[in-house]
Structure formats: structure tokens, C-alpha cells
Amino acid sequence: MNCVALAGGVGGAKFADGLARAIGAESLTVIVNTGDDFELYGLHISPDLDTVMYTLAGIANPDTGWGIAGDTWRNFEMLERYGVAPWFRLGDCDLATHLLRSEMLADGQPLSAVTRELCRRLGVAPRVTPMSDDRVRTVVETEVGLLPFQEYFVKHHWQPAVQAILFEGSEEAEPAPGMLRALETADTIVICPSNPYLSIDPILSLRGVRDVLLNATAPIIAVTPIIAGEAVKGPAAKLMRELGKEPSAVEVARHYADFVNGFVLDERDVALADQIKAMGIGVFVADTLMKSVDDRAHLACDVVSFADRLRPEKLGGCRLNRADGSSR
Ligand code: GDP
Image (tube, rainbow, N blue to C red; front, side):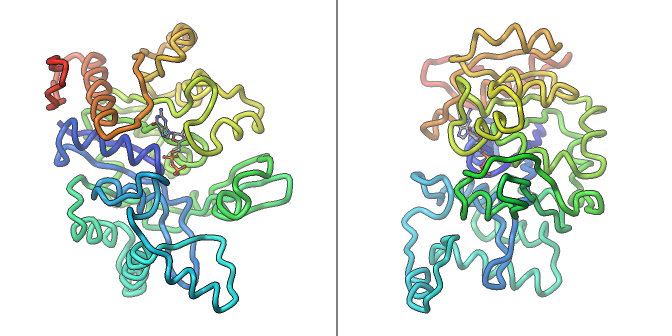
């Protein structure tokens, strides 16, 4: 099996981890948003890549979803002693990642190679790739002016109302090496339950990506990040309201309607299934809330089986032995 997942940070990372457990790490490629990347204290920080990497390495902080479990904050306290009031917190262990990544980038290695190397050293088995080696920066047009993504998200706690979202540099940026080919040759493509506008759209904005998805032979499945009209975490629903859209899974399905074959709807939203089917999209209903590692794997297993039902030749794929004895 050869599955490619498009992912942002927390929602994407949890689902990618489920996929790795369900189908085997060697069968999975995760393409990660880098529109959130930024520079701080001279370091290159890739928040979504880090979240995916730490989650797949089993070292992510389970309470926040980002950062490293058990991390300490001595460097942060020292910065405060210097009179700096950092609005972006970097844990001591987390800092090591940014130091190494920044050094390798300064040595001239592309971000995709740096990511491969960091993953290798952390024992992350799935292929994890940034969406591009080139600089793309998400900028949010808000009621208080244009804000670089991290200022909007972290400094302003995503409170200013959003008017538009821009991906600076995406027109010139090349998709990461091998990324379009990975999508062309995948037998399953999954859009993770990530923020459609802030995490997935930057990937879709890159040259060639939409065309590859429109022409893909593999089933393309999107998993809803919206449950009962709300985001599980973060600004997705608030953002939808501000952009004049109804915050619902139907709107997410519509956002992807050009290229998805299947949509995974949460069981709390089962009443919306017909609206999505009316767009010509197959619907699978599941409990999509991933509270535990088992939830991730079971959801991923169901998604892979759903994809299998949407193609003429069955691949099987999910290796999980479910506690309930079913082999999906
Ligand atoms: P970010 O870059 O860290 O914001 O990460 P993502 O864009 O990957 O994830 C944020 C999105 O994931 C939000 O819209 C959440 O609603 C969604 N999300 C997070 N956890 C879950 C979950 O357990 N189930 C579902 N269905 N969505 C989730």
C-alpha cells in the first residue's frame, strides 16, 4: 500500500500517527504545511513539521499537542531575565531541533533533506516531507492589519477577525522534490483533519498540486476537522464564520469538492451526510474525535477501508486487529 497524507500540525499529526499504525510506517508519506514556518532569534522554526515529527516519534506533549512531553523552560526563563518577553515559547528540548535544523539549513541543505535527517535521528519511520523547500509564508489579513501567521496565531491568540489569507511566495515556490510524483503514484490520498484554510490550502496553493489531485487515479479522502459546527482545537470554525462561510463539515466538503471522492463525517453530524453526497462525494460516518492513540489508529483503519471501497481493485491495507475482532 502507498498512502500519501496532507497534513498541518495537531489534527494532521494525530491522524498521520493513526495511519502509520494502521497501514505500517513504510506505506506512508506525510506532506506537511510549511506556511506556518518563521524565524525567531535567528532560528528556523517549522511548527507543523515539528508537531508531525514529534507525534510520529512518540515524544509529543499529549496535553498541548505541540512541543515535547516533559520539556522544561529554562531558556525561556533566561530570556525573561534578559528582559525579553518571548511571545513564542520554545522548550529546552524543542530548542535542540531548531538549532540543528537551522545549522543544517545554513550549511546549504534543503528543508526536505534536513527533515529526512531529523526524522531518521528520531526514529520516525514514515516519510515526512515539507510541502516545499522554498519559502512560503502564510499572512493573515485581519481587522488589525496584515499579520504574519505566528503573530496572528500565537501572539494574538487568533482573536483578530480574519478577512483574507495569503500564501506569500507560493507562486514561485516549487513543491518539494518527489512530492508530485508521490501523489501521482499513491494508491490512497488522505486530507487529514487539519485546518482547511491555514494548513491544507498552503499545500494546495503550490504549483501543480491541484492538477495532480484533479487527475489522481487514487481515491482521495478528506477527514473532517469540524465536529458539530466547531473545531476540535484552534480557529477553523471562527475563521469560517469570519470568511462568511457556515462553520460545518458540509462547507469543508465543499471546499475540497473539486478533487475528493470521499469525505469522513463525524457521527455527531450524520444528518449532514445527504448534503455532502449531493455534491457527488461518498460519505463515511465515524467517531472522528481522536482522544487516544487507539482512536487514531481505528479512525485511520476505517478511512483506509473506506478508500478501498471507492476503487475497483481492493488493496486491503489496514493491519490492525481490532479488539472487537473485526478485521476491517
Ligand atoms: P495546527 O496547524 O496545529 O492548527 O494543526 P492542524 O491544522 O493539523 O489541526 C487543526 C485542526 O484539527 C482543527 O481544525 C481541529 O478541529 C482539527 N482536529 C484536531 N484534533 C482533532 C480530532 O481529534 N478529530 C477531528 N475530527 N479533528 C481534529
